[in-house]
Length: 114
Length: 113
Image (cartoon, rainbow over all chains, first blue to last red; front, side, top):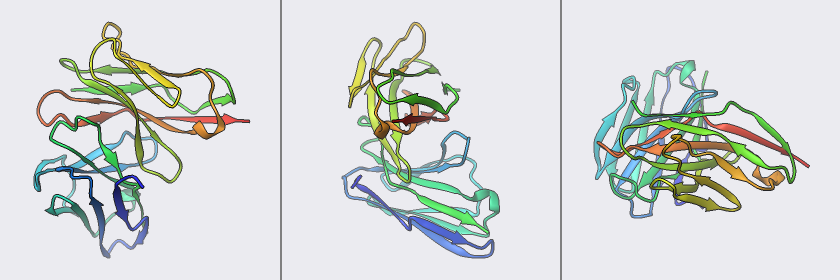
């Protein structure tokens, strides 16, 4: 148990579908992150939330829409995705903006867009 | 901008061999440095870290020393096991702005019996 739980673990969706990824942490952390991990590419930071406020959005296409309703939950809403969006989506959390203890990652959601 | 460069993989070793995975970084100021490990089907786990020059991080037999003069943070283990097979990520934490983590591309380690 890593302390950060992501659901679902696997997701297959068509390009016209709408789905959501969920991330939950009960570590008392106040910053949460979405990363995209594609084969043979560096981890890509997508969004950062600090105290439920989005503080960074790295030019992510609008077909990805994050939501952070409270400090324990983070969602990634997906719609009209493309096959190149297939990847492992990782959620992480940290305590404080500086993440002094490093980040705690979830196990990820393996997304396949068909 | 800040960046991390890791050696290309996969690194293939026999059990009990010595491991080195090279990592160098480019950053302004003095970042903190980390090694993360990702086992198959899992997320990333923090393996070790160092927060200032000449610090040595260690955990589970792995070690890495923060070398400011060579901007390096190479990961070493004296005797690897099959269970060490995983992908290893070097990362730095920026010390300006939001201080987010910047990752390398990862190095896959394969250890055979």
